[in-house]
Amino acid sequence: MLEHLVRYAERKGLGDDPCFEAKPVKWSIALGNDGSFRGISPLGNPDDKGWKGKPFPKAPRTPGGELQAGGKSHFLSETAETVLLLSPEKPKPNKTLEETKASIKEKHAYFAKLIEDAHKSGVRILAPVVHFMSDNKSIEAAKQEIARTKKFKPTDTLTFDIGGKSVMEMDNWHSFWRKKRDMPQNKKQPGGHLMPCLATGEMVTPLATHDVIKGVFGADKKGAKLIAFDKIAFRSYGLKQSENAPVSARAESRYRAALNDLVKNSFPLVYPKKGKGGIQLIYWTRDENKADPVDLVKNGEEATFDFFDGDPELQRGGLLAALKAFHKGDYRPQGYESNQFYGCSLNGNGKGPLVVRDWWETSLTNVLQNVIEWFNDLEIANCRAPKFGALLYALVREDLKKELSTHIPIQLMRSALHGLPLPRAVLGKALHRHNIDLMREGEVRIERVALIKAFLNRVRKESDPAMTTELSKNETDHAYRCGRLLAVFEKIQRASRPDLNAGLVQRYYGAASSTPALVMPRLFKLSKHHLATLAGGLAEYFQKQIEEITDIKKMGTTFKRTLTLEEQGRFALGYYHQRAQRKDNDTPDIQQNIQ
Image (cartoon, rainbow, N blue to C red; front, top):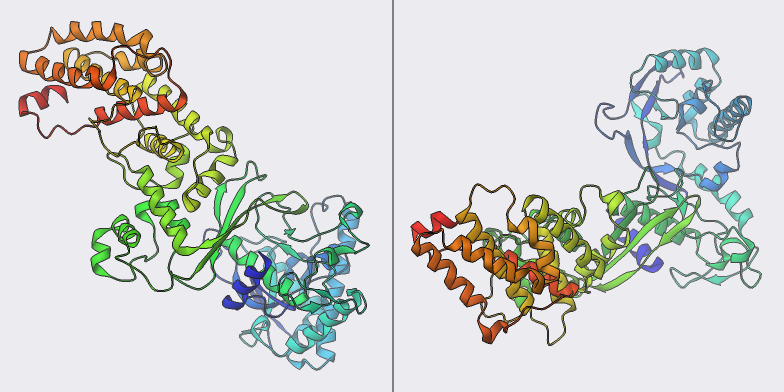
């Protein structure tokens, strides 16, 4: 995993220099060339939803471990309370108000000293910033202006603008910062101890401590480490800290930058509850290309990427047409054949290290073939390519966070991308919600039936029937035909008694789908009573349907006492197929009466 993350970072140009990182900053203090205060302005539009400021691709980086030790700050950009020495209204966690004030004062002094050290080393462009940081009147003027500024928070980050150009975009200070970062880093390295890097295979002096990955669900607000050995029990053979998983400083910078980039574009499989928990799927390919199998699974027909590569013929046919052409070999976009697909699901563990739940590595072509099979298995009458979220919501009443186990979304995504069977819990939940909705409202949710079909086809034995997209009159499975029969009984009752609020499905579906021998004979009697009230042509039409379904050669002479969970699934599909059957061959009069 580390090797492929490093390669991803190299391809994207991320983390090449461990002394720098991409960082957003929200506000800028404008200074004159003499260091005079000219005002404070936002970077970007504070009214934008999710405003994070302006991203700077090469901002100076200070490892989180150094900052957490206390007394230190970032270089050139920091929080407003540190830069302007703002008095806090509340104490920081686990600190008194006086301790919080002392901490901010110490960080302010360190921030000013870093800039002064850079200026003394030859970075003359920072002279106005040095003057500002030593001028109490200028700092007080900045405090007053920032207090009048809307959308401002003391924890927002500040940087400086000199003569209309941000110091973060200058490169005069880069050599100073590299030299500054090399000094503490060299002190931390175990002296002369070479080990093979897990990410590159090179013999290196391993980095003592790794920095955090940000934005992972369930992790600490400051981030969480992928590699950390903070307990003696986790140390082997006398190796200290991250020597247990040796990685060079450059490889650490690259894998961390890659993870930070991938987490920003991750797919939430499970959303956190009250800020805790949650699971994210990160994924990428070895070589750059337009394929996004996860977006296909997530959005179905509404997938946004250009899978068609600009081909108007494929675009006209739609996404599934292109996928089927890919499946048959008629369509081969460039960059797919020899490409690799990587993915894993992540979540935080409070203040502990990240949890990598799984790791996937396979060919991109294989993943796309699996996605095609996914949609084929889900395809059901009146429903072609449902969204992933719609499938999840089909398994609950209304709240995914409260009602759905966290392992189900992960297993569903694995099933889609890797062609694996669906978990049995999916069938149980789908049938449970299917029965409840039918008995309460007489409604069928298509995505739920699609999941039932996909489950049955992916776990079926050679002796089990394959479930089709639309009605299969030749299917001899007993449970399937029982479901069809119930749908016909429902149509008969609806034609005979259109005024009924609660029909036989609401009253009998649950029992009919689990114990048909107990219920079906009673429904036969009811149907005869209802048929007697219908006009001759319509009664004859329904009678023929009953006779076709109950053909002794295909269904037998008795109903089963109980149906297994899989048989209940086939019952549900038979019911849905018969209910959704097209009436193209019906006469207009009959069609009008039975709709």
